[in-house]
Image 1: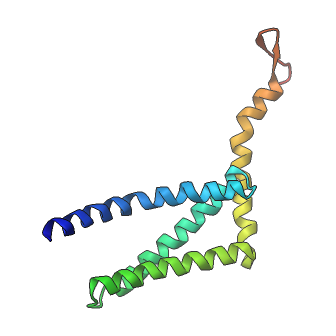
Image 2 (image 1 turned 60 degrees about the horizontal axis):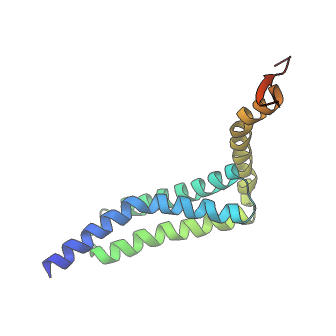
Image 3 (image 1 turned 180 degrees about the vertical axis):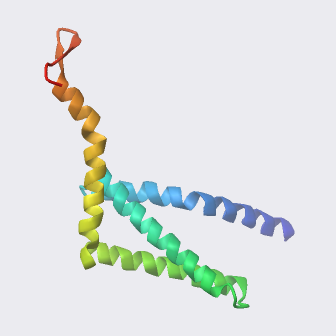
Length: 138
């Protein structure tokens, strides 16, 4: 029995460390599949992850003074983060208080600065007979 508890503890620690990365990869993938740009996808998923993490931390901090069983504490903490994530997603989908507009603006800025080097290369360098030639005025 002791080895099962120890094994579960190790798996839980591994999951807790890897869950944000898995969430980010899956969330960005879903947003890209819905037709968003990479910048908007990263901004939307990052904001949702931040809201869920902060809500989880706030609930854990608020319940820290109570003597609750570990299972009940875990349910409350996970539930707080989950509810905050659902609320954030609903606010984003319905553009509540300009949430979608603001996140899309941040994502658009990310896309703009991400594309600057490629735009500069395309504007200032031209491929001619096997080599790049620099245009004048760059």
